[in-house]
Image (cartoon, rainbow, N blue to C red; front, side):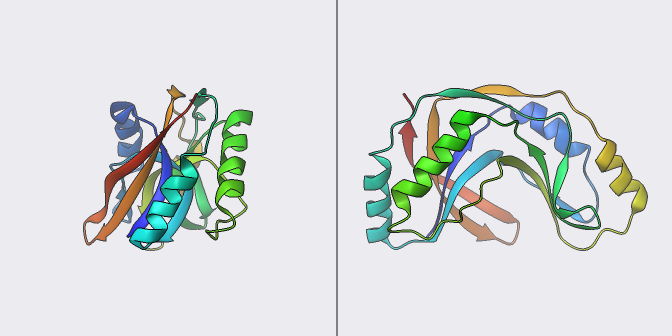
Length: 174
């Protein structure tokens, strides 16, 4: 099973309103808003049990996050792959991501980089609509703030209509 650890964002109405502004025939909008802290990939049952054991050792204070007021993208504006809402820098968020990497690095191969963001849409084929790209670069939105008190472990199943997420565990923050 494909497994990842995330921060739920909530605020579905606000995020859906922002997502509706990026709608385009080449963009598949997401319907589950979260910040991925670690993607563990395909795990066996034994590996999942081990991961849950490791995560039980995680202690970290709760904190408040705020999104940016603009849309950004991976890879670049000329080769869009993902449109997302950046999350403002927060020392406790970066410390949390580092703790997770350190806790799991002997068992799981996790990337060293972490760029906190909320995915809004995935680009399915190249977009050559310069007016759309310019509009995305100029799009502004109200920042959203929320308190992070829990991390959620998800199983992700890839389906033709998009990913389906099932909650399989959680970690409460102090």
